[in-house]
Amino acid sequence: MEASKDFQSFYQSTLVPVIETLEAERKKIARAVYLSVAFVIIYFMVSMSLAFNGSSNSAPSTPMDPYANQGAQPQMVYGPSSSGSGSYFIFILLAGGLGYYFWFLPKRKNLRLRFKSEVIGKMVKFVDENLNYKPEQGMARGEFLESHIFLSAGDRFTSEDLVTGRIGNTEIRFAEVRTERRDDEGRRNAQYQTYDTLFRGILFKADFNKNFNGRTVVLTDQAEKAFGGLGTFFQKMNQMRDPLIKMDDVNFEKAFAVYGTDPVEAHYLLSPSLMERILNFKSKLGKIELSFVDSHLYVAIPTRQNLFESRLFSSIVKYPKLETYHHYLQSLAGMVEDLNLNTRIWTKE
Image (cartoon, rainbow, N blue to C red; front, side):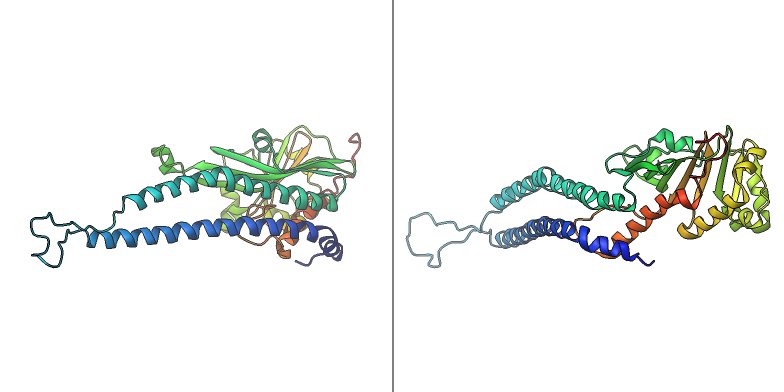
């Protein structure tokens, strides 16, 4: 993926000064963590060594000359006790726990929020001045389910990095979303709260340029890929979805399975030009799912990583990472143009 010269210039002139400041702070925090861990490890190793030597020398001994100081009680000599070092080790563990919760976590959170507001926020404005970035907000569980792309929001739902705004005539909002389902072990034993990821990616919502009342869902056709010619049979057997709708575009049929409440409306929405645009957009971002519900367009784009994040133990200044973030932001904002959403149809304004 080649970055535009405009973004390269923006990166050098606007982002680099901010990133260098954040990178210096990141290194300072990371260095303190490394030193603390090294101290605990060294102290533990020394304490274990002293305790081991003390136990081997713990047998009492008498003076070398058995006839010296006759009538006096022999002086007993013992090896060093490990109780003191053990107490110090417990103290260090307690101090480490307090430092983790009251120093490390606040520092990490502050660095993360500064990166989002000072770097990602500027990138969002660079993509389009009309967009607003709210890093600690996200899409609601209700919006996720209203899309009808997903049949469940799972047992645990989180969303962040909300971007909202108006591009031309079109209101848009998108955010990162992660939904998880408690796995079988977690359901059998509440002590083990382990989860399987159902969806991790970006959910995009936009005001569509045509009025409609029904529901049309466009899903990447995994059945066709898995079962070849039997794909249509498995699509029709999907009782959890609305009836399957056959489209006239052969390439679109191979790429997607369309379900909806009204076949006539589905063909009205999915015009030949829009189907071509969706195929082009899919080739740009990979697997995508779409739906048309309540005069809105929803698009779900799965991702393999948590986007728009800084990591404490890896460099912030890596350009390819920011280039990837810019690619996603530009593609999502560009969806309005790619799918021709600003063209208002009839009564839609």
